[in-house]
Amino acid sequence: MKAALIRGITPAERVGLTDVPVPRPRPGWVLVKVMGFGMNHSEQLLRLGEIEADYIRKPVVPGIECVGEIADPSDSPFKKGQRVVALMGGMGRSFDGSYAEYALLPAHHVFAVRSDLPWDALAAVPETWFTAWGSLFECLQLKANDALLIRGATCALGYAAMQIAKALGCRVTATTHREAKLPLLSDADEALLDDGRLTGRVHGVTKALDLVGPRSLKDTLTAVDKGGIVCQTGILGGVFALNGFDPIKDIPNGVYLTGFFSNYPTQAVMDAIFDFLSAYEITPRYGARFDFRDIREACIALDSGRVNGKIVVTMGE
Ligand SMILES: NC(=O)c1ccc[n+]([C@@H]2O[C@H](COP(=O)([O-])OP(=O)(O)OC[C@H]3O[C@@H](n4cnc5c(N)ncnc54)[C@H](OP(=O)(O)O)[C@@H]3O)[C@@H](O)[C@H]2O)c1
Image 1 (cartoon, rainbow, N blue to C red):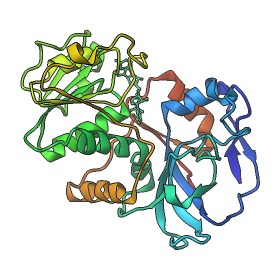
Image 2: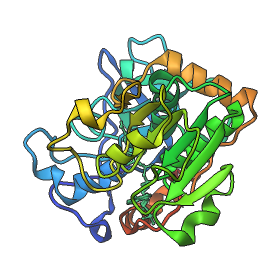
Image 3: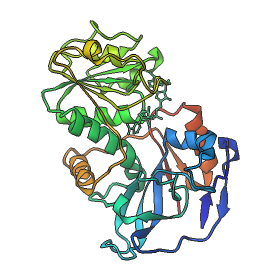
Image 4: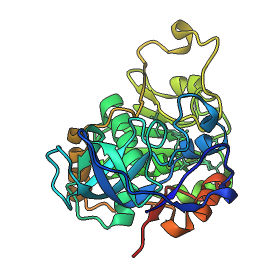
């Protein structure tokens, strides 16, 4: 089969396909014929540095998520040909991931698909929608009458959160740090240019999804109404942790702070996502699609940061 293998630091321009054996099924693991996958910033970080860390398998096939069909169910309850998605759990890091025609994956991180979406739209779902879903429902307990602030909304996660919240009936305020990108947020009820301070500029916000991260978190906490919940999910601002964070003074009285980590997907949540997509007749939005044979161009596009939304790769014929 064809796969993109990386052994050390690999700029996008040096990514290419090589011939490797199709992995052999073993107990607890299922062989998936990959039909498509979404790309993630963490795969760029892997290629450009993390690959050197001891805990990364080398060489490794990157890719933390995929959509496809069961090629060999091994000892799992899956059926050959069944449509599935898979994500996380060490995929593309401690075992080979999705940048390949076949992937051998732990059965507990492979999930049945209740959807007949085409492969390209399906490929936009696993990691991005699981993260948006968990942030909005598990963490923010989002309801139709909420006013949701999405801070740093011009990213795959932001667009997915906007699709979910608008379908549910929420009022959505979405922000970007680039004036030129305000038109990309036209699905929101209000699009704001984020200059680092939203406190006093937004009103009546009951829930906030912060994708900019620790750089803006203190301001997000003071921008929501009393009783509001803030979920910290993204780190687009490039600050990963907050030294000197003082919970007593920095979290206003009666405001709640939570965070979401996408490492623990479940079949129940995947079912809920696919039922929601079908009930609201939503086609998941993505920013660009590449054929697998053009994986190098897909990696270049990922590293450029110029694609507005999820990059999906499909396998073609
Ligand atoms: N907690 C979790 O488990 C989890 C899971 C998945 C992703 N994430 C995080 O969620 C965030 C979004 O992920 P994604 O995959 O949706 O990202 P993405 O689609 O790759 O989006 C990246 C784009 O976001 C834009 N952006 C928007 N606001 C920004 C800001 N304030 N500073 C810098 N860039 C900004 C940038 O474009 P412009 O600068 O041109 O606007 C950048 O190109 C990332 O931080 C990611 O690490 C977290």
